[in-house]
Length: 195
Image (cartoon, rainbow, N blue to C red; front, side, top):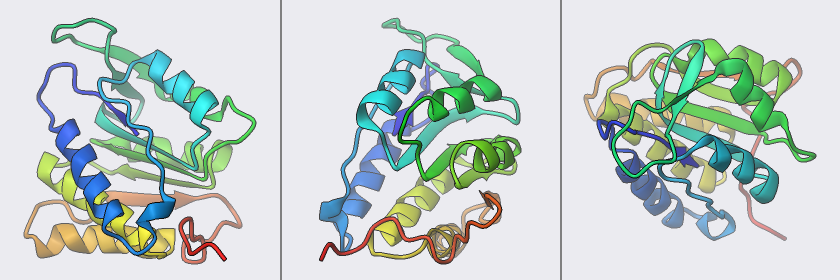
């Protein structure tokens, strides 16, 4: 879980806290292990992928159709490091155990998800336009809670959208789910009871 807000204008640590609480309170939450990377840099991205080998890569921060913004490895507010979408997808794919899902919980990131789903992970989620910070937190917390309750990726995505809508927040329809050919988000369950 990568979080980046070099300018300090997003509540990415609040998002991480809400996601953790939602998962820990879920039915199979004890089966989920987190690797939080606040103030994420390019080194955090590569190290997290190769060392942790996550099933899910989650990014919260600034982005658009062509890039994500990670932080500089400095101790003060900064403009960040621009990572082109192609570089990000190469970094996520640079492992013997690629993830099953990439979530870009950041503005205008949906332009990147078709490529991610086709070339990197069978499922990818991004936002089709600018997304309110509170709506992004609400979507992510409910999405991961539903997944940790044993729901499919498709059902968890729908649940996250519903949470934004019933809270009366703008943009419930902005989270967008893409999948590789032959991959069905309604049958893909990432968290379930161990037998």
